[in-house]
Image 1 (cartoon, rainbow, N blue to C red):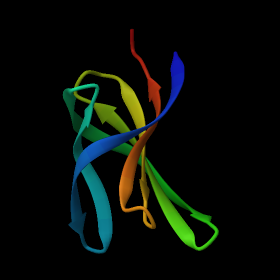
Image 2 (tube, helix red, strand yellow):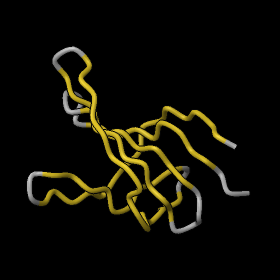
Image 3 (cartoon, helix red, strand yellow):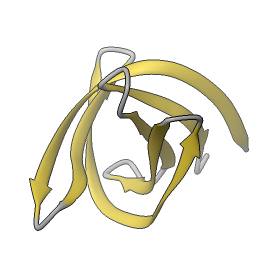
Amino acid sequence: MIESIEEPIEVLGLFRGGGLQPLRFRWKNRVIQVRKVTGDWSVNDGRDRIYYFSVLGDNSDYYELSYHTRKLAWQLSRVWLAG
């Protein structure tokens, strides 16, 4: 089941080689480790840039995270629950 969330989240990320990679994030008072980044892309929103990451969590669920450069903020956009 795919669910649209659109909630702010806290993310621990790594900036390396000019790129950004989420390592883990907190959602609903749980810390979810990113097991694998399965895709990434970016879009322009006016003068702002939004970076998206499709990630597999350590709980076997898939998440879509977004990083908004103007706000310097992360958001959980969507979640695909395995169960």
